[in-house]
Figure 1: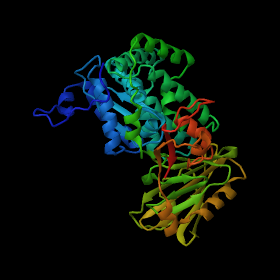
Figure 2: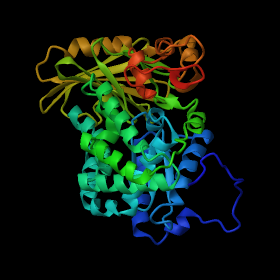
Figure 3: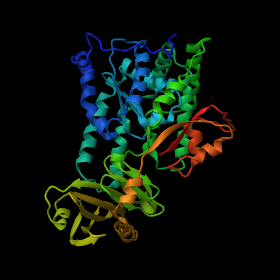
Figure 4: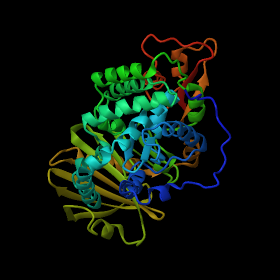
Length: 465
């Protein structure tokens, strides 16, 4: 049984094993290496925080030392994404998002997820699905290189990467069994696997209030979550645990994620209610009241009633050409050249045009600001009367942020607080920021069941600046 509180002095090795050297002649590793940059880019880059990286490395190290193939080297990347996901690529490439770390409640739960993904690598599940994957990668590149007139196509592309790590049900159950055994052998709580599956189930219910909020359910969409699977996980845990009582590693886990970035990252701007704000670019705009904003890596997408969709992004203005020429330079499908006109938007040079393709009508608006061209695409089903009011409202709301607005824009973070006498679940939940469902989200991220009580001295997560 490994003591999870013991941390030996760690120094550099005299004969370091470099991952790239170990993996050099491994064809599986070459497959992982080829896909690695694409994965990192599509999930917002790597999340860099020494404290959190040390936490994840400590958990992975304990698992590696008892894994079924101790010669397999692993390269673990924390992805800078609020989505909840973890997956593996052939050759020992492991990924976990900061969104998943924010949902977990102890080191054993993160260990359960990593052990499961390491089991996919050990069992070579990745090779079995490589052909399917490569066909999909080619298809997604084709979509990515064409500014699709069908916004649903764009959203399908964003979801395409979720299937990159989708395994068959049989492979999932096999990885559960191997993972839970590894978890126990590494000194972690084997019941953490079923606990985290329960948390995912609760998260799924929380998100299902927004039926189109599937982008955050990456892990669920690639890891089918059934009551039978949770029960099987408990059975494997009972078999692995025996009579051993183990520390789940909650204390050092909470230390490691205190201050973890939560939700949107500053580089991609922030969604606050119906408003998108980007401090770095100094711009903001509002979407209509009943729209929902999705802040993705490649663009801001918003969807509203009546199948109305909005896409916003920015490109570098390298040419300095007239915006009326830029609109007609070939990137818009189905453009009607007779509708192109020059306008100004809150003091900024701009141009608009209309386009039609497939079942959609579009308003295209481009706005120049400094060395950047910002682009709004508003799409409505052909003939819908919603096009003008939606596009006009968007344009009217697009403006520079004031210095005060920029200064007050701070990212949300996971903050670990200690329960004081007189604190209740309700009073702690009232301190949550960035959500209008404070109590629900507080209970969810702390895995508190209905009727749970908290006591002075307990440590809880809240989301605040």
